[in-house]
Image 1 (spheres, helix red, strand yellow):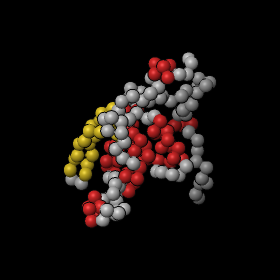
Image 2 (cartoon, one colour; image 1 turned 90 degrees about the vertical axis):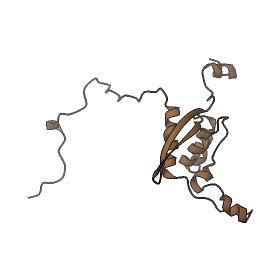
Image 3 (spheres, one colour; image 1 turned 180 degrees about the vertical axis):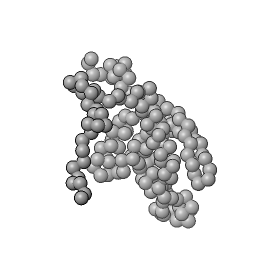
Image 4 (tube, one colour; image 1 turned 120 degrees about the vertical axis):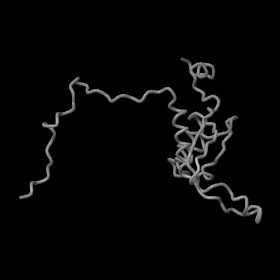
Length: 155
């Protein structure tokens, strides 16, 4: 294949439209359900991963910020929104120069978002099976042939 826009399009090498997902998480005593849009992993997530590898942003926050978007594919969060929260609107109302933030994204919501990202990016893929040994022999040992502990016996 010659690498060009048309051959990449035919091969499905562009992430396409965001995928709509419903997520549910526990917020205190309440269960909350929301609709989110997940951008399949692509350029934005690669950039996020490079920034994280360079120590410029948190890897998990970057992954969420790169993947969670609106239905048009526009980001909903920045990595800073996830790790420290958005600017506090109450504080901004009092002082337009306030930099006070609302706090990190809730842990249960974070897990729900990561689960949705995982589901979108692994849709239809089967988990890989354990690899077999190259000699064709079974590498598992019966319980009676299990290696012994190297700890010395106590008298």
